[in-house]
Image (tube, rainbow, N blue to C red; front, side, top):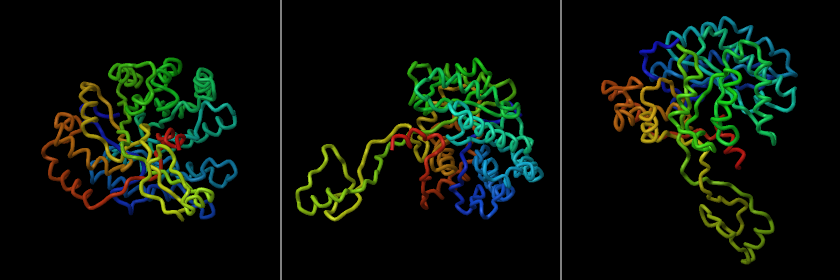
Length: 387
């Protein structure tokens, strides 16, 4: 377990944007016989990169064992067991580098699904990921983060069904699974209700609480309750992200009828529609600008917002998974920002003036040009639904 005197960790999920040459999983189609061993071979230099940049927490892709639980492809089902030696070596290296690892299964892994077959498949997925963490010989701080799931028109029944699904899980899954509050369906109150009946550990998500807190719970008090769900000696972790603030660009097809009207000069602009640029009469697509959806993650973390949160949480101990869409790049920017604007907060993460030169070099790299992740993050389901 983590030494209590150790500085708090900052981490990021999956894709390494600071090194585009580093792949994080075997993405070949089944016809090419992809394998967990290949994913681990790709991830080995990722650990070296994390150590070099002093990034000490990392979320593995939930797809590093391709097709391992595909019901129609039994040829892949022994993949995790067959990779025991490679998993053990990878876990040993992560421990030697003091890098905390985790999984966040996809939104299709549902313990509260009304369909028992989907629940059973979800438990299989969770079992496979828990087995990987076990074979890596990682301690109880290596977890799998899940959400309650769908409401299915009955919140109370859906919460109760999650408990029923949890109770069906094998012990090695229960030891790894943790439950997170989400942004549009199940609030902090909901997951605390489930914790009281199961003992499952909880992940506090800062942005989600702002998006969904109908009970108007106090943030510090709620955070303390979430942290208390973790056993003594096992360091909790939380999620933090800033919301997107820029206008969204939505591509819309122009119907043949509307195009004909534009050519004829009889087209009428939609009331209140904001366009990125004037649309030519012969155009087939237009770009509509819309306000942000606050469940979306910003590319980078607002350092003032994060420092304010950390000062509110003064005296509490937890690691922080930063969910900025620019992944590791968001941390390369956040750390010098903290040292510059909030050195007291920086110190909690072991960042001091001695690191200033190295952090400035990393920050300078960002000025050469970077691109944010285009795909929605696993915690941006509301953004998908809204589109």
